[in-house]
Image 1 (cartoon, helix red, strand yellow):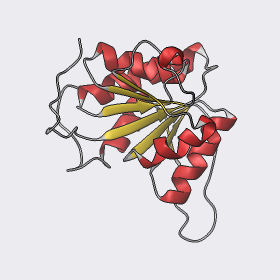
Image 2 (image 1 turned 180 degrees about the vertical axis):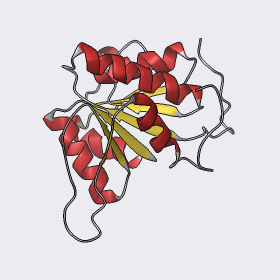
Image 3 (image 1 turned 90 degrees about the horizontal axis):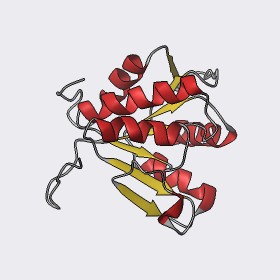
Length: 174
């Protein structure tokens, strides 16, 4: 079931869910729960559109009736996971990460890979809040440094990310 959204309606907000395509089963379960909860609050779930964490978050959101958007690195939709409402083949390769980061009010990183780390770093440098779940152990250093925040559960990650959407915390089934 795909929700209908008119061209004049604006979605409640976008939250990126990032993580490795070669995720563990535990990370995929966490990502699926994150996607489900975000969709339950009306957020659009934005991912890189591939397997692993990206597919799991999209699956959770899709099953909850939410909107999912995948920014693909290549030039074809054939590489997209089957849970995307919209897939955009950017042709940008890894550079699509900048598009993903800049399109979100917040990011939730589930697990870690080098690609995930680059997205985290870009988000921190551009002021996009990042919540880390079961992945990289990163700490900001220096005066006034605003780095990623470690969270322990999918619920904590979603609650934190929702605070950055237009109007603050969304309402809905969560």
